Image (cartoon, rainbow, N blue to C red; front, side, top):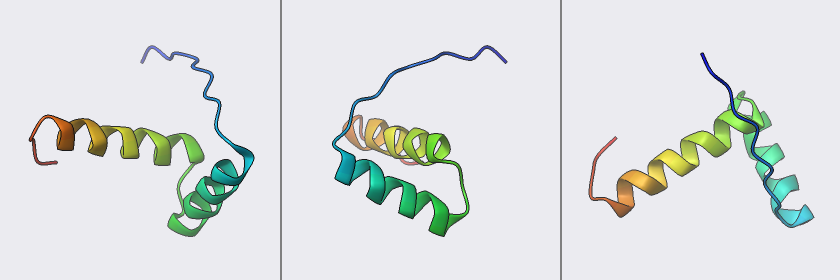
Length: 49
């Protein structure tokens, strides 16, 4: 699998909340962000996940 590095700048408070959410869901922060982006993309294009 090819991996990319992508710098994401977010406010510290948003990052802290994202870390808490990832921990409570038992997933990595990267996985949480990837899933959220996927859901946003599907919603924007009228597709179901």
